[in-house]
Image (cartoon, rainbow, N blue to C red; front, side, top):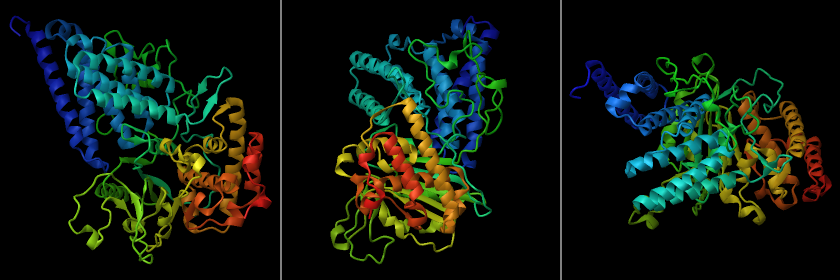
Length: 589
């Protein structure tokens, strides 16, 4: 710094200090516990504060930093990328989709201002890897926000960047990046299992988050006193498409358990920019001449927010239940996260566990010991060292979640969804503590005609996520015009309304009514009823093992076999011209 003016020297020193401090805090995030709430919020607050200062500082002193420090555009991009990562991880920890939108704003700004455009000219392979990772993270955020047109653009750009990277450096991770690209392409293809088409035959991307339009009606009663507060979403299927530790089932379920962002004016349809359009994050006022503008962050748990938000104030906090996402966890991880969710439950709060996993079948001959001797579901592919006498002493599978493992958590209201070919083993979980307990279980089998599609996501989860998509899929409707989709959606709405009315008036276990007051749990229960009625009527699903089960059992005549619900399903089938796929009510057993 010799010969540099004192003022310029102070600016460079302060920038270096802020940059180093921000890196230390950012790297420390990985050491924070992934569970609980209070343990990490203060640390996130400090990290957001330092990045707010760093971003403002580089904006205010860009000329000095350019000439005296040699600040490069990719370095600005790296700071913005880390802010985007902060927002994404804050979304994962809070389940509030506002922060997902903020992550998108920063990632879009990096692309729009081409901060990484000269990365390849630096002759540094590590810088190219950072650029590739940025693309992968941006794609995940866009997938979660259903900005599918932009996802496809990003995938093409990533493909080109991988080619440039591997041809220039011939790196050892060439195969790894090729696999990442294939994962993304497979994931996008699987997500579009049924295409809703505009009049010009272009695909319309629909969001399936909860909105005022999709919230099922209910006649509230004092018994409906529980709200869903803590959720554990587990994806462990070995042969299911996934990207970035999100299986397709996890991806669908996490959206089902979130409310639609209220400030997204185009929230029903995909609002991502078409080719050649300017991303929303880059409209005037959000981007200054020297970089992306930030307003000051609030102290404590609230992160910094972009000036794209009205008044530059705190993000509006929404009441989404808190989620943990676990991809192929070990048994001990499941226990830790379940215990954390259990501990964090407020009064009148409910805990939910959703697991999509392959069955773990037992050959033991003690069916009376239903907690552990009928098998369960595999949670992880990790293999423990084989015990030398494993066969002799009949050791059980280490990473299998057995029904008995869940008994301690029934001390509080517990809602369980098991999507597996061994799901029915969970129907015998006892209510030792008298607390509300509901278990929804997927069919154990699916007809051969649909088995090839299992790697694209489970049919049961698809029914819980988008009932009309699942209905079209089992009727071999792979493309549907938007006007027909919307008319058919009205049949689903009528079904849900009628099922909700029957639900509250039939003789039913009190557990259901206590959960029924919560918007998300009511939606899942009514979609479960739709799934059961549809599969019971469908000719390809003859046999009890092709239908879902629940515990406690729901009444047949007053609900699951109710003529009004069956007629609505058959009317829907007629409207789609697939009535021949379904039995008449007098043909049913």
